[in-house]
Image (cartoon, rainbow, N blue to C red; front, side, top):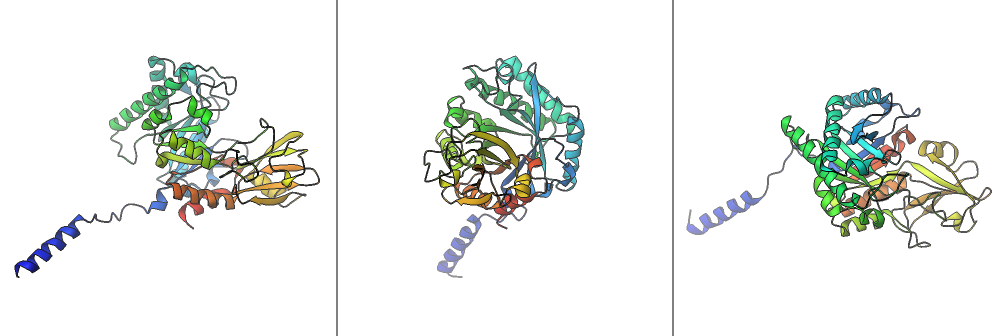
Length: 382
């Protein structure tokens, strides 16, 4: 072999050696998207019917905070947790996460986060529950640091203490993962559920807090409700042209990006329920109009059974917001909700932006897994 051919051979060899080998054991990119369900036990929920094979995580809602400790409050919590564990027979990779707080049980977070001793007690008590019930991680749903919420204790110091509480939890979970020799995929996880508004970001240090988190569940819903002066899409992906200043999921994601949160840690939240108003001004099919009173929210199954293109309600589509809505011209009633079409647009947005996946609240509102199946198919390209 002459020197020229030898040079060509060596060049080709070095080039091929620089190409990374394909890891055939790693799932395709689409399979790495998180699909996360909040499960709130109720009479409508039958845990064995949950399509666990279409989920990466189930978050059990909720544990309470008392005397700076994480505690289970309800009589049947232990039963429900044991039932959820059986879902791993359907999906051995399913992660079961304990969620703490929520709207009603966030009253004592500020006290629990106030001192180093309190934070340590909180974190250690949480780990004890994870070990007792064979769970895989912790979700903090403090609604909201530095804000009154549901008549909560709150302080200006919550801004820094929120970060410190997450740090204490992260350290406790990592310590336990090390002691159990849990591998990278199986290490205990830590997440938070957060408001998708500038107000939440003003009262937290999300650029610092995110360092301790596996992912952030951005609650991109409840943008409109009985607390707003007009109707509106309560979970719009984008702002509608008739109300360009309205909040949206896309705006929320951008706010978090600007606040220093990596997009790959953001999980986009979606509601499996609709909100409604009656006595609505009959213009633009009731969108963004004043109303006389709020009406009861409805789970997706109830909307299918009694509302969507039934009983005088007509489904409409806002193509700017990428959101469906119902309008009943006789009763002047407006409902905002999510459906398979809007979930497909959310999934496309998640892929475009490089987000971590999709979360929904909550499973009892979709007992036949219709929206869950639509969510899964949208994320996985089916």
